[in-house]
Image 1 (spheres, protein in one colour):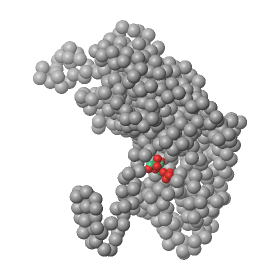
Image 2 (cartoon, protein in one colour):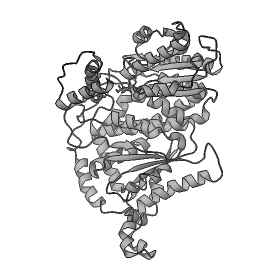
Image 3 (tube, rainbow, N blue to C red):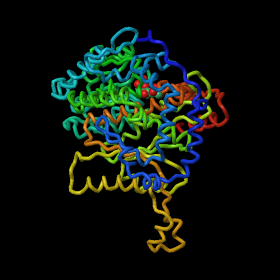
Image 4 (tube, rainbow, N blue to C red):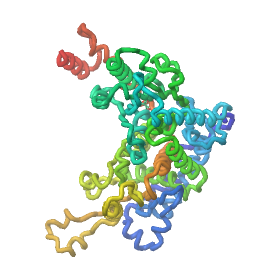
Length: 550
Ligand code: F6P
């Protein structure tokens, strides 16, 4: 695949005619209120609602006109978005700084597909690993795989961090409804010993399986937790090192480090350097997910990803949900000065979805230089954050409604509940619709006065409105629906990166802190007083800590 000609390099985002036209256009747009946009155009809601891949995407409450869309699409053309999408799907090494493909779409390709890296079709490898995962999942779920002492495995602890944790824990929580309830799942990520201690405090070692998940198998946190897990297990199982084989499996691209740890090659589930950590929840990194929901549901999850991939790849940009979402983010960041985007799932099972998206969005697009290494003269990724509704309404929505910042919101909701309970779901959905309407249309001075509000209170009770949101409405939170949602955000992030000309697939920004920590560890642990050569503040903190620990 890498014989293709490289995709053309786009001129700087701010150089093309679309940028200048958008700047001009947004000057007028800022003065337009969503009230007017709706009242002057009865067909607006219908025209700006898309149905694709089982998602109803209502973006009519965005501060856009047809002209805004036309200019955003022109901006996408100037960025060669179509070519960049084709390059990703073709397995080109679009992660230029690491000289790698970014081929997570191959993880959910059907068995017969042909997607090549260096001339080799990777799809059979993907399905070989999926097959081994399914066999293993069947043995754990069915009680056939036994612990060292012959007891059934009842507890599964995933040890990993970043993409080797956030995807698994998010998917487990999101799909808990479908999970094998006779198994207990725990997730350990933090090097803070409390995370491990609390995760295992009530578990029987003889019934516990650890999945050590790490793409590199060198990550400080994961290796430290894995060694503590081994000590914990052996201390409880009589110290017989042979027990490790029955209680540890690994998910990694680093076979040598896995065997050095003492985990047999047979108990390792591999993936590849063309899968980025934050794009890996549908690779073997999803082993805990498959153990929880079973191979059939895992394949349904993959089919959801695939459906969104196909939509992203083939739908015209004006009818392409991830492209439109990505373009809207660019609009608010670069033309309205928005600093953040709130993601608000009205579905309790998606409580870890915003946390998952933090890594996906910000580790991907938190970049300050272009693919060519030139410092950008525009903002890149906003801060993504959020909480499930309706909880957030009683916490931070005040700022979204009446604060001084523009915060575009994504509302995510489902037509049917997984736990039907009296009126709960109607009340939940009423709140989704009410919030998006209140944000968009607000309540003006005249309306507040007409309610008989005391004059002194009028300014306090005014809602300016004109606060934009997307509403994503799906039928039900199924495994396939989750796959669609994750792929949707993956491709929206890709779209943003293409417009910003940045590499969404490296993460050099995490390195400096890691290297400094490695240098500081011996300074904290040495018996003799170390010679410290950091800045004054860091030296003083290290000295104080050493005194504290005695
Ligand atoms: O430190 C950042 C990071 O490299 C992430 O990109 C990655 O998801 C995480 O660490 C974990 O890495 P690994 O799976 O190699 O342990």
